[in-house]
Length: 82
Length: 443
Image (tube, rainbow over all chains, first blue to last red; front, side, top):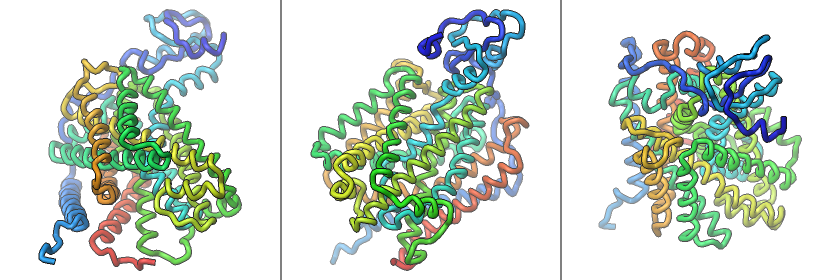
């Protein structure tokens, strides 16, 4: 078997005795994945829910802080009288 | 798991299969090597694309300011970046869906929309910095950015238009491998090897102690080595490549090799920056450093650094734009695959085109606030990263999605919560520095 034969896939219908078949994922038949379509929202304990609420507040606050800082650096709050 | 059926050895008899494209091999080791090579790609690309233009600038600056004294941080980041991306591998293979889709589905509309908008914003600002780096490197090579930047944007669009994931992956892996030239540059600048080994394995603080610029650089190194878009990119990439359950171990190996490759290349960038410190060259940006370094290290090093800056930006741009296009396509329910031609996935390709085209156009506007954009990228990414990893961590403990086999083990959770706490502390320090610039001494 030449090196080029290893790289060039061919149509395989039967595997000779004690052989293996290497199939590229994109050439393989689609496999059954976990079906998440019916799952809906993740069930959470109260503490996890509260922690996520706190994270939400933290992120909003940080985004506003960054926005203020960037606008400040861009000269949005400079006194135009000067 | 169809490939498991195909992959088993036929013990004693010939087996008949439905027709499938593949390679028949006799040796088990050859079967393992070839299977790994078919899976190989997303792990290397997600890691090496993170050594983008911003990363080149950050690592080279760290070397130019502090020599090799911060190499130990890279060694610490190696397992961190692997552990985070390994979780993405399991999630992507188990669900066959992207990260944005999973966030929407499991955490609801608010979090789904927030992570998507934040991702698109940080990604877009990062793309502007990639094109700014291309423009900078081209101008140092006496090529007009007005010609070079649109050409680079065009090449980046052509890269994805073939309607073949494999073709895009081969080109991108080739660009990743080109980054090995950083290793040659590191050798060419004649570093002190004993000092490199010592600085890599013995943590230490550079002379001058903890200052504002050191803290900012450390946070920038962490932020540039682990970026939020990587979570979205690798999961979508794995879904697009249709990796199978039996590929998990090979995808993990791909991710580990990618992490090692990336950290080695990043270390070499720091060593190249160290050469500027050794020769007393003041650092402003990697292109200026390359220009001044050529007196000591030769024209080849200068040209290589400039070309590698462009390569880093191209790699970063294709991966980041794809993470945006995949994420947007998943949430909108549009067809979103590199395997599809444009007519079958117009929204996906249009998102990619808009990301690349708009970022390139902004860089060509005279007087665009590029410094503000670079600052915005670093701060926003720093804020977004810990929360993005929290959601990843919650998804990896979701037995309804992953089942007992792929869900996080207790040791996974201990490692990941430690990473999240450290990242949150760094994020808070960054926020404090933005709010109070005099928090740490200036020098």
